[in-house]
Image 1 (cartoon, rainbow, N blue to C red):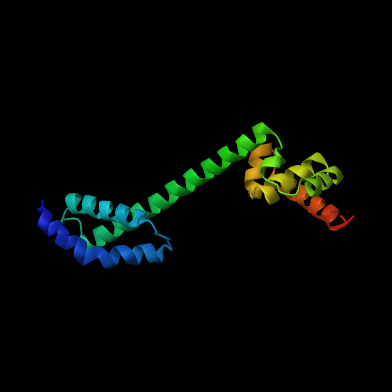
Image 2 (image 1 turned 180 degrees about the horizontal axis):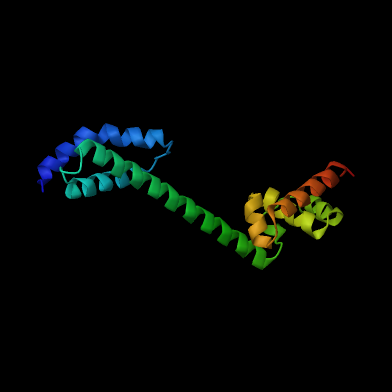
Length: 164
């Protein structure tokens, strides 16, 4: 086990490696969260390195890259769960367009010409910017069903006169 001063030297020597992996994985690290995660991975690698198993540089590179990939996956899962939760809240509250839409008259006219499922597509996809996948999960239908709702809704909306 090495001392703290030696670890600081290891950090200075491998800072470019951390930035390399962040760039190679195309990570936007504005808050330096990924850099901090990579530093922690470097520290764990520093403490667990066994020189009989291979070179230190290969080991730390592997540990840093895997830690960054794990963080990407975790954040992706968290974002998906959060957006599904928000969508379920919207679904439970019903179609509360007053909170999201400025021109109530226009959206009421749109809703009047669409079927319930077509309106669901407009409401979730256009107004709340949910993905087809999220809408399908929320409504308990296939992605193709949601795409079909959108296709028919777009066709009807093209026929909607913009002025009365």
